[in-house]
Amino acid sequence: MLCSGCRENTVTAGEDLCERCLAAADTSPPTESDRAAAVSSPPAEPPGSHPAAVDTPSPAPGSGPAAVDTPSPAPGSGPATSDVVPQAGVSKAPPAPGLRPVVQAPGPLSVLRSPVGLGHAVSVLLLLVALGEIAAAVAALNLRRLMGLVTVGYSEEDAELADRLLVATSAFQIAAYLATVVVFIVWFHRVRSNADAFAPGMVERGRGWAVGGWFIPVAGLWIPRGIAVEVWRASRTDPLAPDKHEPHTLVNIWWVGFVVATVFTRYADRVYDNATTAQQVVNAVDQLVVGNALQIVAAVLAVLFVRRLTHMQHTKALNGTGRTVAV
Image (cartoon, rainbow, N blue to C red):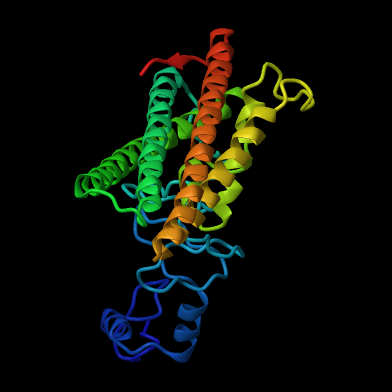
C-alpha cells in the first residue's frame, strides 16, 4: 500500500503515512487550527503548584494571590477568608488591636500632715510681731516727746537716743514680720492641703492659691479670706452642716482686723514720710501709734485663729479622718 502523502513509499496495513512523511509532519509549523486549540486550553501547571482560580486574571508580578470576587484585605488586618492557601514560610500579620478603654489617671493622694508644729511656730512669731509693735510705739512716743521740746530745746543725747530706738525697732519689726509671713504661709498651705483629705472638693480654689493669693494686688484683700472660710468648714466635725454649726466668726474677725491694720499702717507711714514740720511730725507719730495698736490687735486675733484652726484639724485627724504624718 502506497503512502497517502508522497505516493512513493509503501506503508504497512493500517498506516496512512510513511516514516519520512511522519518526520516531516512533526517539524512543520503549527496551523491556525492548532493555535486556536492552544489558546482555548490552559497550560499544564508544574507539579506542586497551587490551582489557579477559574476565569480570574493572573495577579501582577510580586503581588499575593487574589481572592475570587473578594477585595484585597487592608494592610495589617487578619487573613482574608478566601480559598487561597497561605504560602509556607510566610508569617501571618497580627490582627489589628481593638479599642482600649480610656482610664483616667488618679489624682494626687491627699494625705494629712500635722499642722501642730507650724501652728506653734506661727503663734510665737505673731507674738514677736506684737512685741515689735509695742517697741515701735514706745520709740514713736519718745520722738513725739522730743518734737514737743522744739520750742524749749532738747539735748543731742536725746536726739541720738530717739534715732537709735527708731532704727532698732524698725529692724526688729522687719525681721519678725518677714519670718512670720513665711511660716504663716507655709502653715496656711498645709491646712489648705489637709482640707482636701477632710472634705474633698469643698475648697474651690487649688492649693497654690493658699500661697499666691496673698501677693495679688487688691484681690489679696479677699482671696485668702475665702480660702480660710472653706478650710474652716472642711475642718469642722461635720463639713456639710450649716454655718451655724461651728461658725467661722473668728475667721471674719481676724480678717477684718488684719485688713484694717494693714491699710491704716500704710496710710500712717505715708503721712509720716511726708511730714516736714514739728507739728506734722507730732500728728504723724500719733497716727503711727494708732497703727501700732491695730497691728497688736491683729496679731492677737491671728494667734487665736491659727490655734483654733490647728486644734480643729488635729482633733479631726485623731478621730480617724485620714492619717496624720508628723513633721
